[in-house]
Amino acid sequence: MATIAHVKKLFWGNDSDDTIDASVVKEKNSQISEQVYVNGVPVYQDGNGAPVEQVSPLGYHVGWAGILFLNVSQMVGTGVFSTPGSILRALDSVGLSILYWVFGFIIAAASLAIYLEYASMFPNRSGGQVAYLEQAYPRPAFFFPVTYAFFTVAFSFSSSNAVVLARYIYRAAGYQASEWANKGLALASYTFLAFLCLISTKWSMRLMNLISAVKLIILLFIVFTGFAVLGGGTRVKNPRQNFQNSFDGITNNGNDIVNALVSINFAYQGYANAFNVVNEIRNPFHSLKRVTPISLIIVFILYVLANVAYFAAVPAAEIRESGELAAALFFEAVFGDKHARGLPALIAVSAAGNIMAVIIGATRQVRECARQGMIPWPHVWASTRPFGTPCAPILLKWGLTCIVILALPFGDAFDFLVDLRSYPDNLYIFLMVIGVYWLRHQRKKAGLPPPPFQAWHSALILSAAVCLFILIMPWYPPEQSDVSFWYATYCVVGIGLFVAMGLYYVFWIKLLPKWGKYQIRTETLVSEQDGSVTHRLTKVKNAEVEEWDRTHDDAGNVTIETGAVGAVKHDHLIRRLRVRDAATLNYEAEGKA
Picture 1 (cartoon, helix red, strand yellow):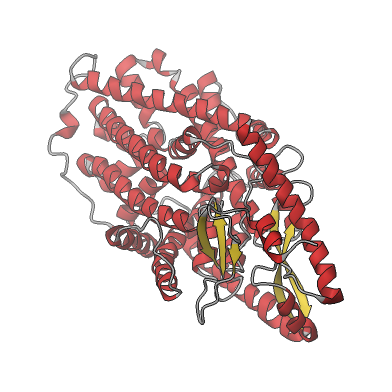
Picture 2 (cartoon, one colour; picture 1 turned 180 degrees about the vertical axis):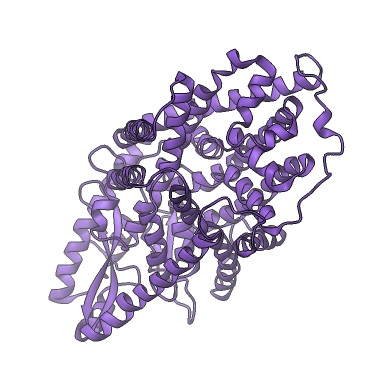
């Protein structure tokens, strides 16, 4: 019969002093309830959160190149090739349009600092916002996990990216496709890319890295071509015309200003994609702290210089009305119509890499929601069988993407759903800012050391202010709406969904247990097949709650005790912990090999 210390050592692993590696930190009115040692470093988290997986069932296929290109590939999709026109149309100023790309970098850098602080506190939790909001707001119990799980699962589609990919493939082929032809190619392309991510994380990461490198080469080509234009080495006449009096005519419409800011934020979205795969990185925080800022800086420099190249080659009036074709106009102005036809193929490659990066990151968020116990059959969603990938989340994302592409016609309804999906993002960043201060307070109150990395107050304040601005200003009437329905409809629907989830939470977590005379508790499950660890929400009758709380810790693990009941639970725990111990030994053997 193993001792309690040995059982804990099996489950949590060894620290540098070879001492017992798990303990429960109890502080009155403190949300810090669980201490886990990860690679000899103590990690403190709330017990209701998804359990830490000491060994990643998904493997360790994300190195420094994976971190770099996961971020780069999601940031550099089609935005830099298409959004300059919409930004100039909203701002009416060339100088301010270019300056907005600098603003976007500053905002993204401030938000990145917030993610780094969370990653320093929870270095082995994948899922990004899923894990961080769970830990920042553990009370009321399950509220934020329930709400986030709904938006994560319900909006797990990438229909717009797939459609853009299809359109550029057809444009590269010179074929005028119908709407259903676009839908068909979008489905086929997305299915192929999702299949690659389904069968192998290792090879899908390698392919995404290769595509991302091609993206950077494309942007570098545009940048150097822009230098040639400014130097007078091309057929473009008067290349500096757009930079004379470039700040004249700036708009004063609040809705247009915020729309341009939303477009810029969308272009930088992806700076935190690598935080979705934290538990698949060896020594994650050390790597993230060094590589993620580099990825953002690279993209920022290329974004600004690419926009300078556009305005050097194409008159501002043409870019203003270019829609999604700013890059195409640039190539036509410099190389002529014949040589510009290859651009859509390059943009299609960029869109494909973006889709793969989104699939890899977003499916980890769905898996983490399942590990919290917020999705029925959590062991199915958290499983990595049979290919060592998150199969169920990938299939979910593929299925929802296919449904949206087939069900919705291109146009306002399609764009509305995309806007609705992006609406909660700024609210979540704002809540993460508040959560940082709350976690700092809780750690100090519990007598714990400060996080290894702390975001600057200026970054936190800037991020909160920008999020509030973006959340409030869409209510300000635009001079001219570009949709057939009320301009703020997606805001109202987004708020309505939050309210609906709040009511659902009250009904599921509060009213049903009261009427059914039971309470909800978390239970930790360890898969014998792949070693994945999840929580499951369990109904415990009121008469049995005292016994449950006595025999389980806050994280839902069975505690060791004497007696018949304790012996049964002890043996059950030993059996589960041996699975984890075997996985640990396999991982160490692979590392030595």
